[in-house]
Image (tube, rainbow, N blue to C red; front, top):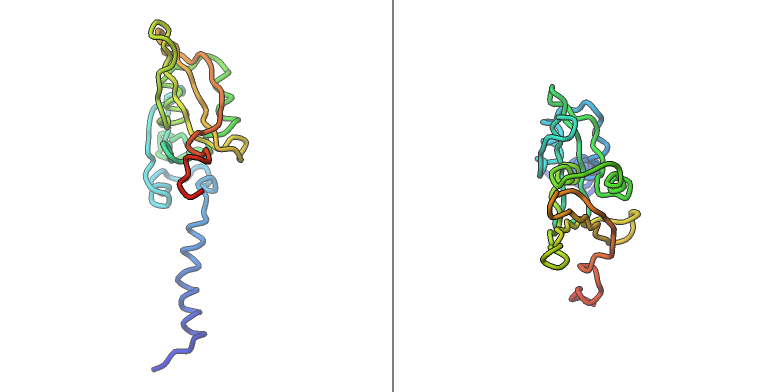
Length: 173
């Protein structure tokens, strides 16, 4: 029994098309109210989980330390998510300017940082958490968040270029 090229292509398309559509599905397309288990089946297990300021479970899918994207959702008592949102964005980082933030709250809001570094003289050394992200959706950047050594609270934050993307760090140029 011989098959024509047309039949082979039709069968291949029938197999590949659903896979291609599934690969294009964005985490942010998941509707609110979806069970967390269904999201896990579709997008994999979250990399991090914590209890947020409201006492709800927060789950985070992150590409840190090398990637520039992360998504988070809050989970209700029934195990359903509210909505999945990108969290390594200018708008999300602006929240740090509102109120007082502890290291634990920053960790629960943004997930684990890409880098943790000390800065300053030993007597006033601060810990800095840096998150890789696309500033304004375009620029390879790090958001640097500074913590007071005595209180553990955020003292300031700012973005800067990510040296990982400096031209001399690429072997193929």
